[in-house]
Amino acid sequence: MKIIKKVWGIIPGLAISILIAVVAKTIERRLPIHIVGASVIALFIGMIINHFWRPDFLKAGIKFASKKVLKFAIILLGASLSVGVILSVGKLSLMVMVF
Image (cartoon, rainbow, N blue to C red; front, side, top):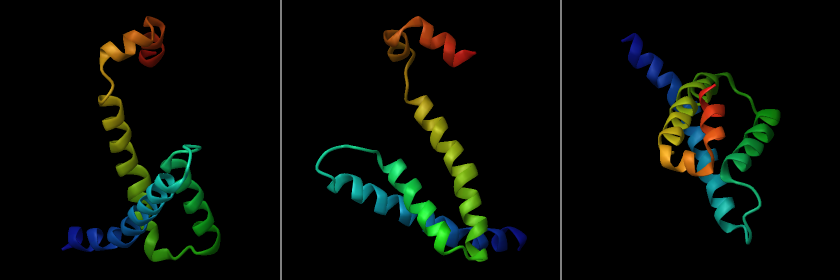
């Protein structure tokens, strides 16, 4: 029962995070030139919303999105880089990434 209650506590904040990501991606696609990425746009949208509207019931989901989901996304992004691509940039870049 505790897990179900915890999951239901996460859903509203996670839904807001997903909505902000979708809006940011839509804005990025509609820009005539690629100035900034959707992640930067989402960051600005989140900062603006946080300044004016900060309800307590969203905190658990936003914390989950900013900790767990973001870490998982970074891992997937790193996994998409192959060693060949890294070596094509330069062997020094591989040393920088390891250390």
